[in-house]
Image 1 (cartoon, rainbow over the protein chains, first blue to last red):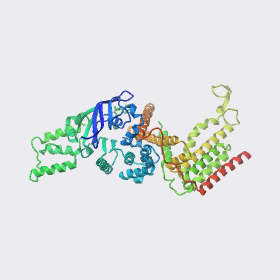
Image 2: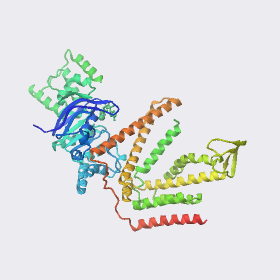
Image 3: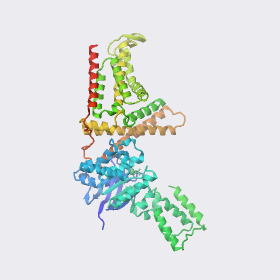
Image 4: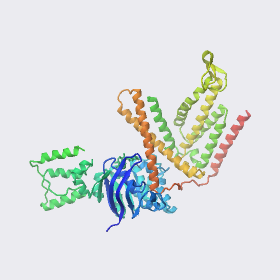
Length: 308
Length: 291
Ligand SMILES: Nc1ncnc2c1ncn2[C@@H]1O[C@H](COP(=O)(O)OP(=O)(O)OP(=O)(O)O)[C@@H](O)[C@H]1O
Ligand SMILES: [Mg+2]
């Protein structure tokens, strides 16, 4: 039985303006898990992450982290520093994270304020910069960085804290393909080291390979499941303006041509595995053909993906 | 809004941003770049203060020449330094100073240089001295040009300091000179985010321009500007809230702990530089008093 890191029970959140951002949210996140939070714009993803990071208290309901209650009293107490060094949050907008005169200062900000001894701060900063491949940006002013460089610097600023849990709000946006796949590799590596990863994202192509579990959030939790379960639920996807991975779409097309299997692959790796298996059971061949419904099915498929 | 304002705004933003964040000139090998930042900061404060105390417009011109000389010795091309200092800053302070050349805005009757209009009777207006003519006075012209010269010189010193110093060094210097850490943090952040917001404005102006076809009606244009201002306000409020949360998340508890402080002792050359600047300022001000 794995240890629960976050336990949310019937959480509501209202912004001071009165707008309701979260309603009836209950979830559990376990140690070492990789969880994606998927949802439309304004669905409350950022709000939920802020609650998980102990930055804002839930308006109603209970939030427990590492077995301890997070409410407005505990958030303002001294105990919270222990929590802060265990949980790191990479904000959606990297400009928010980078307010110091140099990248180095920004990456050192966390360790400095969490009372890490001086010599170790340098070490941690160097390690974080190296991991993200941005040692060369150390002395630059954040203002002079490109969007992707800012994103990496912001992530380094959290990794220097060396938290057990890493929350990231749409971390792959404004990264070029190379940086994006580097980041995916880093996330995987961090998870292998035992860190719990919670990511809000629109980047559905990154989810299958990376995440164990997906929550679909639109003010309230619409669905929860493995990537396979979520992406196969076509009604759910459509009702919430979600995308499905391109590979998944491709295999839906193949299905119209008579490709036959139960679960469609969501990523290149899965596709290779599955195609190999199918080919092996059919004497090394994969059979595709145009049958009487192929065009109807293709039209339906096109319709489906052009509408959202 | 007029093209002129749009364009000037963009240029001013670009220029100041360049001065603060571009490290191109700060990396060159020149006189000011080689001086210890703490010493340089003090020297420039001395120069700016002395310049403020200077009464005589000629003396202010001498101060201005000193800034040009220092710029030249620091390998900053006057071609790019001078036009900006001379053009933008005086244009704006000029707008403030201009009314003072007219007698109606002056506290005492001056020596008329040019009579623009004679009413033939005494006019009484609230807030103004009673007057019968509108004229440009000698004292007014002199006062306005001194004011202009003083501001221009002060600004040119400030710009020179920024151009020849890396922003991060400037921040460490403030800490080393015992400015409160919180003050330094807030100042650094203000600079950072003002430019971010100004970038946002120029982006919004640009996207508006690309959407507008033909000529905009004035009223509509002002409505759009109000919209931009509103968006800017919301954005800056939103950002400040999130920056605070991001700091909390990383362990900030109301006290800024910063290790960036420039503790290297200045060398002989730095002290020579500082004493010659101080010597020059004292000499200049004494000469003025005597003359
Ligand atoms: N500071 C705020 N004040 C008032 N309302 C807010 C504030 N921040 C967010 N909201 C509202 O709360 C709701 C959820 O916002 P949230 O930012 O959590 O969504 P999100 O899922 O992160 O969206 P996105 O994908 O656009 O980042 C939205 O309706 C939003 O308008
Ligand atoms: Mg968000």
